[in-house]
Image (tube, rainbow, N blue to C red; front, side):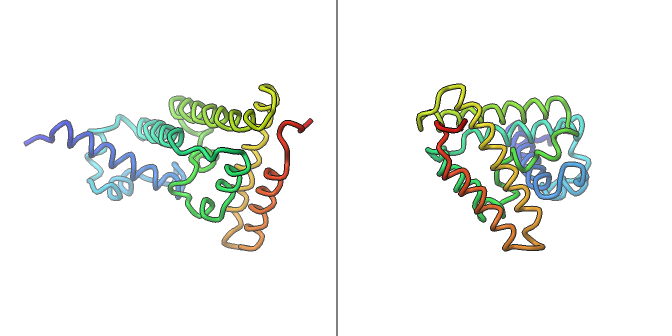
Length: 192
């Protein structure tokens, strides 16, 4: 007896969800198909019923992660966005936090399709930041510039804080605090 289309779609979604969790936690290259399928609750042999290759799975994971992130709520202002993004809670939420920072190290080694999804997700997020900054009084050109600069700073601070948190939690917290304070204290419309 075969699996219904609905059940097949649910199984595929379960594989993508398990892959996303594992890829975020350990990196794409560190996760094998046997482990991935076990995490999803299936045997390794069933993988190829849903995906032609691991690259196809990675592309599906990236597409889903970027779509989910695009649908996440807007913080309303750059200061609020920086406060949420550069929080200890977000730092600790590697498996469900921002996929743009979570996958940044893996993206250069991904397939063209996965890199394209990531790029679309980054562009969409920057447009959201631009709108926040524009609403604070910056020109269109300055809003784009400030959005790129602000997000680069946010990702950098988050990644560095995650890198050192287990060795030096106080230093990790300091990195987040300085990143937040720098972004909150600046006035986008007056930045040179």
